Length: 164
Image (cartoon, rainbow, N blue to C red):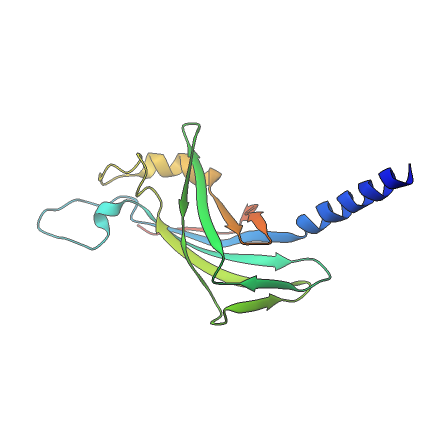
């Protein structure tokens, strides 16, 4: 009986620690939603579909330091369109130049990332207007962060900016 209680307590402590880090999207900037394809004018990236830039924060709500090896971090974006899930790697950058970073208790660290959201999926058709696709996908957009120790998914988008 005592072993069962100890195992349950250890499980609950582990679970509590796992949910003590949060990933929040501070700002999502969407651009290149509707691009006029003019054969006389060529702008870099116009044919790649909508571009998203994201600033996000990893919060450490624990009483312990979190150590990140920034060379081993992976960030992906995931979303749904017509019930089908899509995911892709993000090019990301921390706001620090250190390879090994520490997030002290009750503090956070900011990161930024960007990508052409539909490029490499069957949603990218090289067309000019992606308004309808974005209206369906943006509410489902999540940023997924994982490294050797942590696996987090964004829970909130605080601000969305649309650039036409």
